[in-house]
Image (cartoon, rainbow, N blue to C red; front, side, top):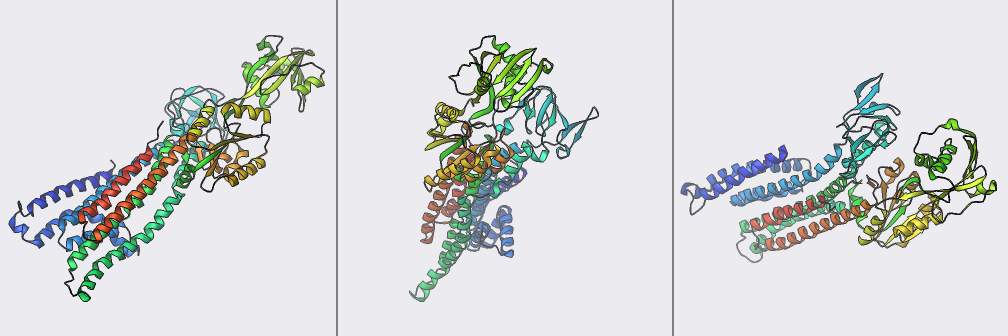
Length: 631
């Protein structure tokens, strides 16, 4: 409990004890006769616990009247309890305030619980950065660190800014970003993102972004602004409360005045003002809409908190509501369903040792910055001595020819082999084929392919189990590669060789063909995906490797790039919406029944307390369930 909650709890305990004591002292059977027979003395005694438990509610109601914002739950509580005290129902008046505050305590606890999940995420905010200047370490504000600066991160410290490790290796705790407890091993040459915690070694990192553009800054901005975007259900509740509260106040006034007047003027019977005023006050307590008004936004807040704890950042409750209706999921391929990193996956038809063939190819390609060249150099795994390479000639769209240790080497596609009149062997596997010729003779080919993410196939299966009607993949890659990836993953449809504008057009076509109450989600990671992420009903971006443009355009961000989190996000959203409607139907249903009973005098003030506070407590406890996310 925080300080505020402890204060409310203390007031509740004191009030409850005083209420029990006064009930005994003022009771007919065990009470003190002097007090039991003196109504004014009883009122004075009961006002003590009443003001202890209700002074803040009365204060808020008074301020609301002064600010011309009369009709809220504080006004209803004040009118009902003051009225009960005037009518001589002292216990009921105190009890209504007491149970209302118990409900407020439950609400405060629930908000605190969900806020803790988000505040845990906020712990990734770095307090300082260790910058290296003239051989010494200086602590500065992360905002002051420029791109290209060298920062030092020691064990136990947070990585303050995105960058590349230039020296050192360590184990990083990424749980605050991804929701995963498994640490990540990093070494020289690896890129690291801000918000991770260094668990072991000292790292020297060259920054690649300013703090304002770094991962941690963008995440905090997303979470801090998420509550500004309200869901349709929240907007409905706000409008509902705006009209509902004045309506029930006027209804209670009519119940207090009209039946006695009709009885007196038309039927000629005693008006019985006390009885009808009591019914009107009971009606007011029952009608208080706090169960609905509190529990609906609280459920969305809890849902966003639970999702952030699982490594899924939702930019607003409206996106949770849209995600819950998702029936079509469209994927980009490279970087989304595949790793987006081309690696050597095989060497075939080689006439020399694989390591020697790879050495020739890596050295010949060492002057190129092409991704294929980089993948050959990574596979070689040794330091490249470019002094061994001469006569390098790059032939656009074909490949490279060079001399390595005086030996003529040609590395490229089938066009290069045809150009050099070298007979080559076709490859039966899918990927980029790099043919190698040594001194004019074919030496074999190297297969380079983008690797499918480990959880990609499982992610598609999980989506189908979640009731997704169709999974679709859009890619700019060649048809042969796209068809192979979609077949391996079990994706329903695939469209290949698309430009960014073609992807937007295809998504628009899919949106027009779906049902009115169904939504389409697009999942991507690159700059070229930003237009599609914006156009889709719900855009989901990969947060760790995704481009800044994609993260900005998306509505939901997956912090660890795991496609399996998509089905988890959908489950969280559906659970959240289900709880919202459970609370709406339950609260309004109970209130309508009790309002009818109260109007006819069947329900007394104790039933009213249950209809108000009891329903609110149940609704709030139900809302807390949105925090819990199954693994």
